[in-house]
Image 1 (tube, one colour):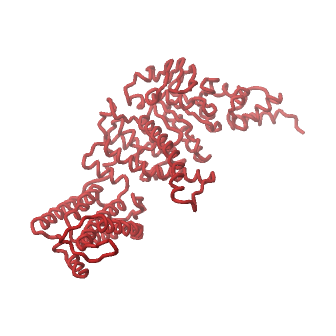
Image 2 (cartoon, helix red, strand yellow):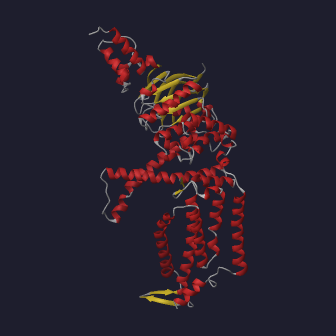
Image 3 (cartoon, rainbow over the protein chains, first blue to last red):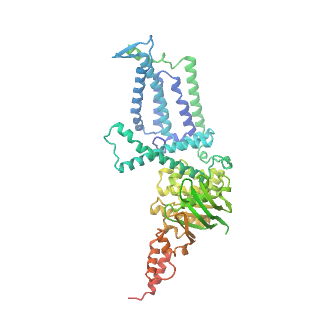
Length: 286
Length: 287
């Protein structure tokens, strides 16, 4: 098994044959698709396509279950926000009324459209993170000739997130070992006591930063001066080569995006008016 | 032998502290020497390591007096990043010094910083993974391997840069005895095959003594004792008075000497102690 950013994928997974750049390109371009697609059924189709890719890549599909609560709560928040906090218009169609709350069809429709735009974006991100190792992300960024310092800072940000979480666990266990137990206490009490975690965590972060700076200096890395101008041989890139099918996939992703734009703006495809799902819902809620 | 490190009348005080961390330090390390530095916690050992590597005064604020020369040149005279090509430091917490996502990336990071070309990087990577036994871990994240493996990665990453002076700051303080032994095995190979100048700050004396050519004792920022390893450990009263507890065999002979049952030089290794004991038992009247 190879450890990816979101879990483990078998070493035999075909996804490892794909160049990391293709995966990053897929993430960047495909997550734009929903921005141009209003009809929810097309965005649902995109989600299913991504799920299929995950299955083909041998991603453990059980991990998707952890996103169900996120999807539900996100949907609820969007729906409530659109119903309670958005404006109204004389032409809006009232479909229900609960006490002083008026529910308009147009607002429900917009909430559904927005929700099904965000979901495929999240699925694309989950696919990318589930199939990419930290190193893949760096390789992808270096392939497109991003400056070393940019890719390096990004890598450190990835790593520091894990370290902060680890440190948080250590601090929490240390607090518990000394008798601090917020179980059964009120939320207000827990929030107030949270400072007990934050102060040592902050101090640890400062120490980590100092140690890390020392490590960088000791390894001969310099942000300025003569040493910073050394031409770096990017060793890790030598493990990766851009094969014919990587070119094909990149072309395919680019072509799909262009076709999408042509269909959207040339032929008004993917609009709300053309959505059979929205039309069916509109009729159903009449 | 040319001098790798020469420290003259060196005093360093960190900013906003009452006492200097190091006071009036004087010693020299010839190229190819294996130097052991010992002393209780807070005695200034790490400050000494940082001073030789240029992290002090480069990365820390404070008051410096005296001189720290590396290969005849004051550390501050080296251009930024240059001294670190000559002096490599392995810190006590291996995890704190990892800068990359896989062991392989970690090992090549320093070499890339030095501007080495790909064939040279490959060659050195091959050598260092063989030396430290890390080949099977190359694709693993360095923070997911065991403590001993982490420390060997940290050591290998510095070794790959082939520094002329290698400083190890308590490299085995977080390790179990087996992992500790493996780190010292690597140091033994380096001493025998590469003739590097190696400075090891360490509490684990049973591993350090057999390798060290010379020893330095620091106490409250001052150099209390310095000398060739065998001569150094003849000062047992002073060492024990400073909270240094040498290995059991050495202490056993020290106790024999104190009770006037043994004369001569205290054996510093287990092998020496065994031979000495054999000699003593052969001289003892048979019962």
